[in-house]
Length: 197
Image (cartoon, rainbow, N blue to C red; front, side, top):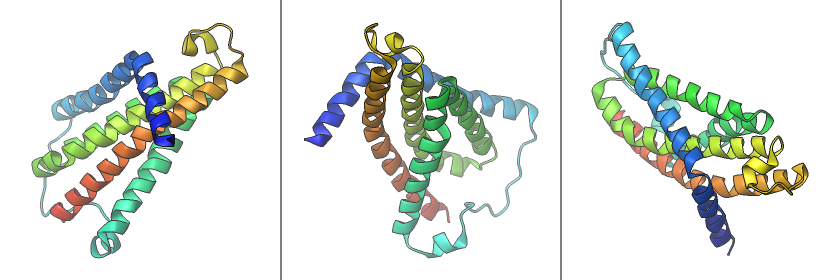
């Protein structure tokens, strides 16, 4: 029952805010693409010799399940919640700005990666990147709700406290597919690391 209500809330959120999701997707993935293009124009090509994934040996020699859970928990707790969503709660443009910054960093990381790593990492970039787009939308909705409730919910009758409660509820609903995306990305990333190791 709880899963159905979360799914319903998220579908409703997506239907109402599809322009925000689309804009954040364009922002994030174009930052990656533009960084790749500019890096190839202005930076020297990196040299590769005996490239290995930058993963602690203890993880490579340990359990793949622990690696998967470690990647998932880190990306959920730190990369999504702390780095992208929570700053938007305080000042809503921060979620979009930090999403763009993450796109810039990923563009640089992909530029310095060998072609085989780039190809193997692409599914992870797509899944994890989409999760961060969801995290940015969640932070933006909550951040705008206490500043301009009418813009978020299209009802001028909401008080700020009511709008904030509704936005937090919507943000939790947005995190349901985000968790699924991040778990899928952690599976793909773990497989990629084990494949490249």
